[in-house]
Image 1: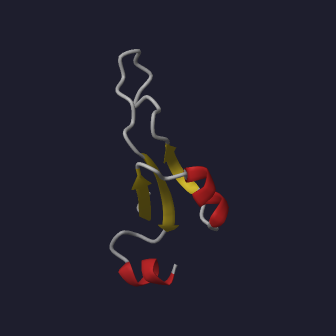
Image 2: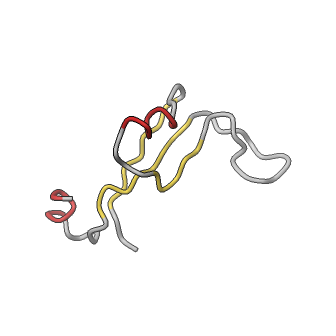
Image 3: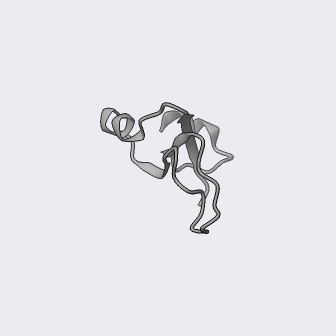
Length: 68
C-alpha cells in the first residue's frame, strides 16, 4: 500500500515519550540496544527510531499527501 512515512531517529531518542507527546501512531518502533534480528549473534541497534504514517495517499499524489 503506497503511503508517505516519516522516520525519526537518534541515539538519545525516547520513542515512548515522543509517541506520548504527538497524535501520530507508530508503524514501526526500534529501540537502541535491541537486537536487529532474532539470531543469537544479531548486532544491536545503535540508535532508536520510529516510523509514522503521515499520509495514506498514493506516492504520486503529492497534493493529497500535503493536505493529509
